[in-house]
Length: 608
Ligand code: G6P
Image 1: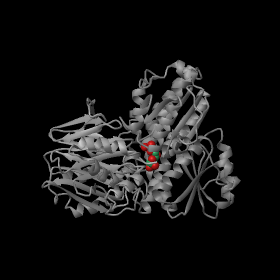
Image 2: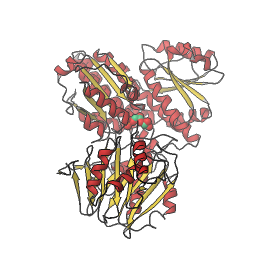
Image 3: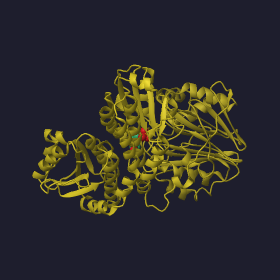
Image 4: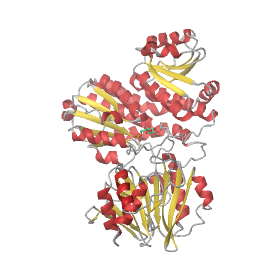
């Protein structure tokens, strides 16, 4: 969703802002804008549409002089995408310019009050209220105005604010929306995430809620709401700059699919020592684990699908009941939680608003929170009791691949770790399971060698109107992800069904030539899924089966077979998901879709 970049230094600000915003394009947006302090006043340029429109309008930023500015990519919430609704928004006198990520929930009442006091609104946004509020509260000290503004607004915000009375500084603040500070040499930055400024600096402050920051060319100061200066810990980001670049690939999604063997290896290797799973990152003791009587897994989107795999895996290996819920439901369902419950929260970005709020709800009710997060220092990581980071590196494509895969392996590590502590595994079962986990990166790499096969299958089906995915147990969990991947990037209608449930309604949708992707990797339920494949084939569906090598599926049940390497049954989702990612990618590519930035979607969903 919305992306923010701010710069102060000795270089021309506008081209730096545009470049930074281009690194945030993946978050999803529909318009963009910049505000630059130039000739003692604030100059604004904004445009509906892709960043390239704004770049063209400003000669890649070169047309606007000035060495301090703020920039924004907007994902519309209040008011349609348009030039006027784009950020930055300015106060009536033009003294303040504001960029905002988040939602001001009480904007309507504030707008009414400000209107009564003579303020005129030109946009439909909630953000314009903030620009006017600054003007309203400003009595010559910008920090005092900021404190009054944040005490008055309700909701979530990351704000960057320019004031024409302050030619050598700008200010920023955040609450429940991401914002980091980048510390350079004679230049400093704010950004929604590190990818936007990685080119310039790796030294970062992660801001906590309601911490206010004053950025000058030569330094950065952070204050609490009482205007007291606070000391922040400096973090150094070790991501390679190239990690956030396409590196010769046509799309980030394909690059990230190909990075999966490495991402999985990077995530598991530091946690397997001398044949044992070592989770130094978490403080759960064996005693704590024995006391857990229920686990909730809470997440959104693909991370939720990892949770569905997690339910099967943890229940099977640990015999602890697991309930998996999408965060937007969990947070409002008055969940029954006690101190013997563990809540596992999964999130790539660590900033998904619903997931963060669900976490807070669970914590308030006494649960212990263990999160699986990809972004270090993110809000979800900060709010958790324990964090296990996935070392996937920056994921730019909206449709997740390597983050999903690394989240999965963390689930396996957690399940085996707990099962061992609970005495549910013999030592040879434990050792075998660990070596099977360690073998996953090579097996994923092997699947990636047969990309052409998936490209061929995509060429046969990219014109389909509807595609169904079926499977049982873990295969069903992976079907959910396969179906989501396909629909989000190719816009083909798609649904995932538990294979046994198909005949309770959905089978009526099967027509001559309907494609059914059937996952039959699990040994125990293999025959049953094959029967379901026969059922749809008997109704003239075309069946694409996904199974492990050395398995036979008769022609009566399947038209095309995709084989994956053999592995421990529980670990098969790590393999079966890969051909589904590739299939979706090639279908979307053949349809000419904007693969990395699918319509209407955002990578980091920071509003409810
Ligand atoms: C968006 C993304 C999905 C992601 C979901 C949850 O919908 O497009 O790929 O799974 O958000 O995001 P998170 O960052 O919490 O994993």
